[in-house]
Image: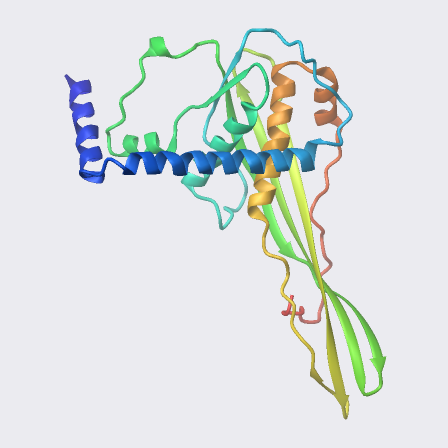
Amino acid sequence: MKKKLNLAILFTIALVSFPLNFDLPASELNQSKSKIRSIEEDLEKSRNNVLSSREYSFDKDLTSEEIDVVIRPYKLSAEQSPDWWSEKQAYDMSFLLVKALNNYPGINASLEKTWEERILETENLLINKKESDINKNRVIITPFVEDFKFQVLTPKKRGIGLVVISINRKTCINETFLSTRYVFDSNIDIEDIESKQLLVKKKSGSSLNANLLLVGKGGGKFKAPEKPLKEVVYNSIADSAEGLYCALTNNGECIKYYQNREYQFPTVEKKRKKKKDKSC
């Protein structure tokens, strides 16, 4: 009876949201397909950037049995919450990880819960799944965002003085760092997988200054490159999905690579008494 009531409420919500507009669902379906296609293209780009130069290989003749993997929403374990972090972002990142994992043969990845189900849950409208519908042999993975840092480094300057006129060249550099960790919640003895991605972006420019009576006039201001949040998230997920796949399929060479690799970390700048150049 309760299940029928929940279905009736959901049907009523659908009618209120899309009254007498039968073209809208098709339009939304096309938009959804377009977004998923864009996500897959971006993931493929990140795979090419992050994974293409690695020396280990995969066995193409894997077992025919599929490995069922359930991805929970990302959890935040960083000391400070990033300015872009939200509960929805946690679900969106898990969705990206599912798409990345399903690119590998023998992996059947799914979300523990979608963002839409989370919304229905908060409204007490979510219909619980039957225990019989849940595969007890599935591997559950809990992802964590452990650290995020974005910083603009002190600009590097080079100048050429010509007495009256000077030419300054400046390089603006920013660094974006994302660290994630993946914990297996299953009977399988698998170590946690880690991923640490550092993106360095540079932008250079020149300025012309007129030096009149030791007072400089003219020049220009340069902005540092924008924060590449999307790129670092996609790179991190592409790297993490490969590591998870290696762990799930027990690929020795690949697991060794993930355990022994050296990471790059953000630059630690020395404190300076002079005021920082605010133009970069």
